[in-house]
Every structure is written in structure tokens, then in C-alpha cells.
Length: 165
Image 1 (cartoon, rainbow, N blue to C red):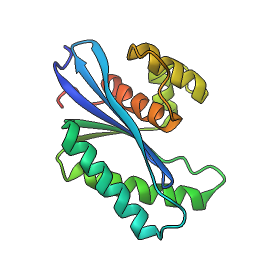
Image 2 (cartoon, rainbow, N blue to C red):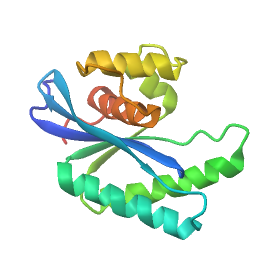
Image 3 (cartoon, one colour):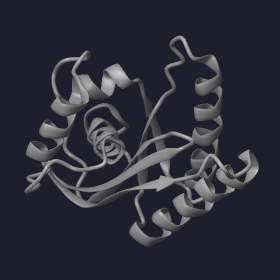
């Protein structure tokens, strides 16, 4: 299948305290980094205020960079179900912000993202940061690691997402 030309992809690593985001541009097989960052909320804020901040800040990111598609990490609950529920709520807030702007959405497990970027589904954060740096020809590994994970989710969209966005 031919490469989709000239699309901008947003990646998100959702979290209530820190939601990483990253924007990449695809031109044929070439990828480049446009911008990345992290939206942070304080534990001193009540939950609705934190979710509203995530929603509103993500909406600003989408409006500023005008991506056409989104790669977002799914939630892995593990042993801490409470943290998983809070992360799910944060994920929902940013998904609504992206869906309201008409983005095509691809959802990927942490293992799928690591496999797409590193080639190994059990890789650690340092390996992901290194490979994101290499794949996007960055001078330094992206920091914080939430932003690197978001860029990795955007890269995963290129390899695992629909080719129509």
C-alpha cells in the first residue's frame, strides 16, 4: 500500500498528573518532529478541574498544530486499579478534545507502541526515548518521558493506523 503523503499526526500518552503529547509530520516514508510537550495537573486540584484542564489544553494543541489523526496509548491497569481508573478518565478527556476536532483515532497498547518503535514489546523507557530520537532525527532524546511516549504513539500510528487519514 502506498504511503500517505503530507499528514500531521498527534500522539498522546495519557495520564492524570502528566499527559504527554507529540506532533509528527509524515511526508511519504519520512517522519519529522513538529513539537512535543506535557500537560500537567496538580494533585491539589479537584478531579473535574484536572480533567477540564487536560481537555482544554489538548484542544489548544490540536487547534495549533492541526493534526488529521491521533495515535493514543490504551490503559494498562496492572495491580493499581485506582490509578488505572484515573488515567482512563484523563484519557477520556483528551479523546473528547481530539474527537471534537474530527481526528481519525488509532488506539494502541503499550506493547504495540514499543514493538513499532523499538522492535521489542518489552523495551524500557530509555530504549523508547533513544529510538524516537533516532527515528525523528532529533539532537537529543525527548524529555520528559511522557512526551517521548507520545511521539512513539504517533510513530506507531504511521505503521499500524489506517492509511486514509
